[in-house]
Length: 270
Ligand code: HPA
Image (cartoon, rainbow, N blue to C red; front, top):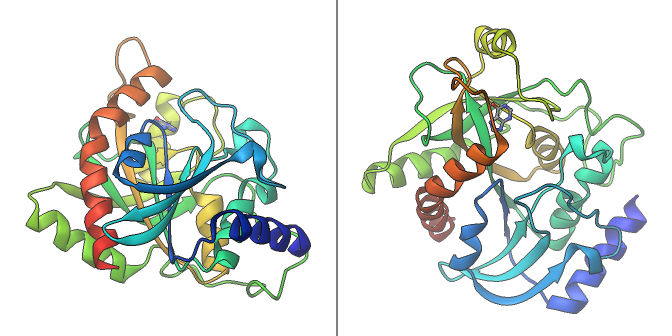
């Protein structure tokens, strides 16, 4: 595993000469952020040794290297989901590579179903904590001591400093930024009405099918994490014709400019 991480990192360094501290993962329908990047180079996942390849509609797979707000960034356009059939180790492989590339800040977005009655469709929710409902943990197996400890602390899994910066940015830009707990689960089926109510009753504010494995691995390696969920549907008040992936993508796209503004300003201040 360590050999693979080193080989992939070496490949990326040689191809791009990348030297930066910020990685950004674009979730469902938020690919528009890529337009904010002064692109210097790109690598398709398919050409990167040991990288998995995405399969889900609405995600294209490439790494984009360039500048946002004058800072060097690597952007992951298209992420890997557990429901696609990857192992936890495979889908968190890019996070391992980022760390070895020198990344210190791991910023991500995702689409999620709202289960806080005060949230509206289209809202942005800054993730302050998560609940792992995948029934798996990406750190199961022999610990790689070179990368991080056997029992990593998760008390501040979503970096408080970055969250404070984002709050300040939201305030100064008249942006409504909710805050809440993200419940991560495998999917790919959406939740039943009883499940949405259950996840709300145990302390969740939004549910989604990504993020948690990557955030655990990022914390294992002491990276600072910042995450935002776009609330694409209301789990407590489900539309008459049910939940649809196309609607999730539509709402995520409409909320795109707000996420883009928040991320650009945050990157400026990191
Ligand atoms: N459940 C799980 N994942 C999601 C949802 C949802 O309601 N909406 C967007 N991603």
